[in-house]
Length: 212
Image (spheres, rainbow, N blue to C red):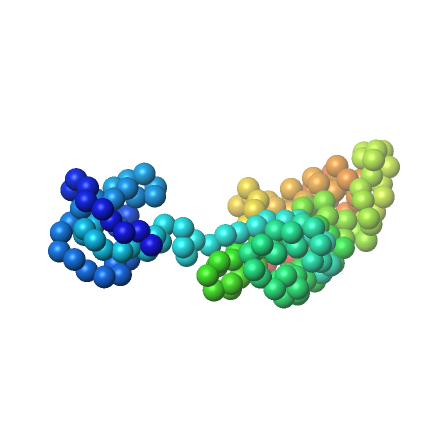
């Protein structure tokens, strides 16, 4: 609570909604706003400072899909917020189970007052997605020379659709070309062919049915 003393009356702060009147008197006087502005208020009135109340807090972390735990990095960050950490972890695992075995970016937004939370799940890195589709654990250390896996064009298009929102491509076809490029740098063939041949097949319309 803030009990206002007598100060010089000045301009009304645009953030006056940050304060709530508890009782009423008659005269307006000013008080410094916590974000370094001023607000015209009434002398003798108690106000509650809402400048930090109601602000949602968030944490971001990289977790293993479907395997998040109450340990670091989530537990130590969520615990001080007064949340049921296990409840949050279960929600994260439910939302990331389709990315089992992959590192997945997640964001937890928390309302400090109500303790309600929401979980936003990002898309794993392209290399992780194509590795899963190719059923390998990691790419080649000597890409262009040694191949460590193979992926179908259906798999390429599947990954392309997942990455649409975070890609510079204008459509699924253009994003698919980016995914093929990632396959090259990871030593992965497409349809048992090097990427150069797949680009030619794309241009000839061989895989048009996958983009309809």
